[in-house]
Image (cartoon, rainbow, N blue to C red; front, side):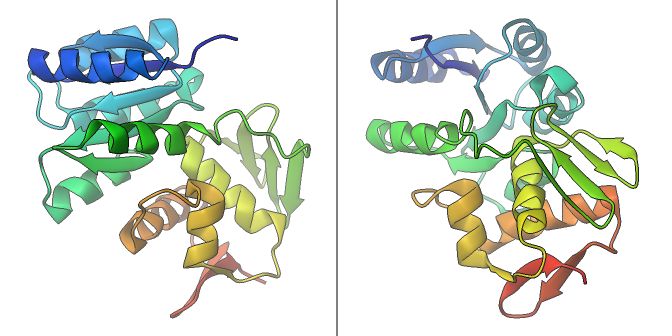
Length: 224
């Protein structure tokens, strides 16, 4: 069985070596880059399952790197998480708005890191057996990993894609925040409300405000 590929991008060589050691020990194939430019080039070459990015790096910081990664259609199914000592709210939100699936704070214990990595990866190759979902002008094509909104094609990062697919799968249902967390990020994921809100906002920016309704104090649903 082919090992899942993880790309580490961090300008601290000691951290790179430590993370590489931990992840190789957990049976992943690990690649490293010490700056965003090299990380972007390597990601396009190897198409990793998961990319772990630092925020503060020379030449191209992590947020800009993430944005450029998300512009590449070949990396649509690649999961991206930040691993950073920057714990300010604006850094966390900027990372999610750039297209990241998660934001993990340094320092992190090895066992917890492996748990978070497994949680991020476990849904990557899952398949519900339904290749398409559609409703009211929205078509979710899981085989091609594209979304059509009134015949306009969109390529979304994995979590945005899964979140929209969830809402489309049952348009009459109001999905609570807990349901969204469990079904999109997994039961073991450490995801806050702002993570969901950022992903909802990104979807609305791309497909418009006319599709997703906020049910105050509860969650979200497709607009009738």
